[in-house]
Image (tube, rainbow, N blue to C red; front, side, top):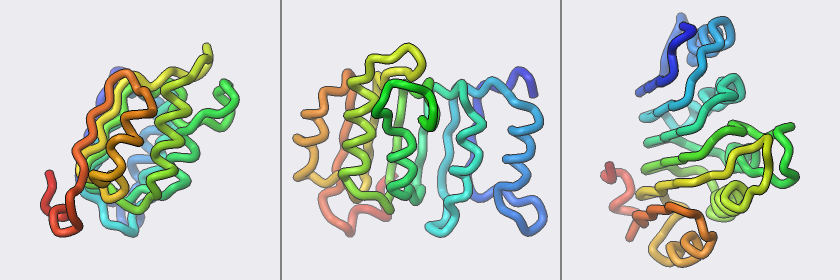
Length: 168
């Protein structure tokens, strides 16, 4: 798939009994120049999709919906020393997530802050983010998120926990 530059997945891709193994093997073997990925609707225990993201070194735009995101994910996206070593998705410029959970607000803010203030030739600056109806972005957190100074930031907070499962 040498021309595949966009990929969208909903639900858990299965090959036999091993979730994500097929997509991981496909991406590793074909090494497509993916620029944009949209993932969503995964069970809370299904974080294996994070394993194939390191294969997407050219990725510029990531959208995640209805996903469980561990703090480690945001730590790996964060950039602290200006080098590409250890930085997940070094060319990421646009990050969108909706109705995601499983992470602390501090992990999200550290990631947004580190990648929006970046001055590096090897790691791209985050230009745009949308945080929609995530449990770690409540109404009380909007001002703090906006204070990060990201060029284009949209935050739609969760007003209460009853709203969360129905947000789309």
